[in-house]
View 1 (cartoon, rainbow, N blue to C red):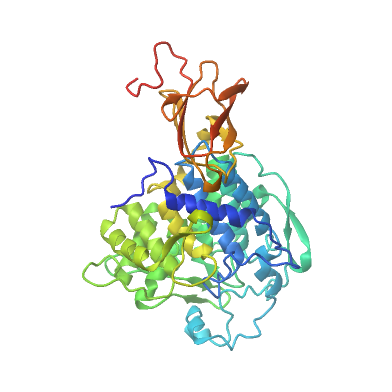
View 2 (cartoon, one colour):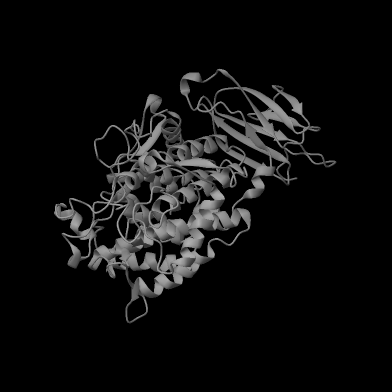
Length: 520
């Protein structure tokens, strides 16, 4: 089974996806009501409910804390990307649906037939489908603030998850720093990360059935994502804001899931509408999709239930059965990639091998851009840019060892921030494939590459902080390197040429310890 181990650092596909993420995040575009996001931001996938660009913003962040397992000492570009994602998220376009889809849907009786499967059968033709946020409907009325609202959990839940990831990767205590969120008719509302986390938690206490996303639907999917952001917040700050979500999981398992006579999970609700007292779950094999879509968010919080959801999905879809062909029952590659990710997490080699063969043959993986330095899956769509939402899960498979996503939320590596850290790397002129701090040998290893091949051979300089320098020795590609200088009590600058290099900074201070002797 290919586990895509990161012992050798980020692979070429991961580095190519990172470069495209950097392009998207750092290229200016206008997300105000007077502008429009660059067309490479995915507001096309998963209609009608997810065809908004903020889903690309949120899901693009998932690989970044996972990449820390390969480059723990190199975090600056990840923080820059996360800052650019969060900045866009709080704009008009970040909450475009809440700010513009007001009141009942005037086209409620004109949905295309393929969309009607997203509504309970008895309500079709008079019931707003997922994606119509319906800000202003009763019993809540118009609420201008997309964060401080009764509905719209899927906006603030993913915002909190994005901010929690940013807090982890950067280690910067910004949870009390105020920022502005753009709402209805360009009104702005001041929030902090801390207030958002506690608002979500308090709302879950008040609503044991769950909080609405679109008025008036309670989504298992959105609830699970909101809980995951709270879990990381707790793990970083020692709070207990996620406990109400864990209480909701017990409620959901009793009311929004069902079991067969053997006690196995048999169905999972897609959403529940407490106003209509109506639940949507997919029939037959399609029911597996209702279980699959929860896995990224629920498995790190409840491994037992996550594994049961996966087993339920595989039984219904038949993807783990070598005697039958893999059939994708819906045109949704993200469901197959989610199943791949979970098969890899659980060591289900049979399912992994079957689905990996499909992804390699049908999802169109290829490098692109200048010097083919960007990578994505194109899914045969013949579009000018790869779909961000579809690629988000595939990138999670490529960029880290199994278990990395769960470790972010259950055992975040916060100690890394006090260890040797690279600053001022001129990315994307030069990039970093791998860093490894061997505390026993007292050596920091850094593997670089020419992220922009046209600059190969040119000079570059970066800083290493949190590094004892009194006894420092530096080697480049196995030879002593004198292109460095001390710039502080625990800081050095390193000069080298832009290229693929293996750099070793040894600071051994114990007598008779040779930091370059791997037997020491």
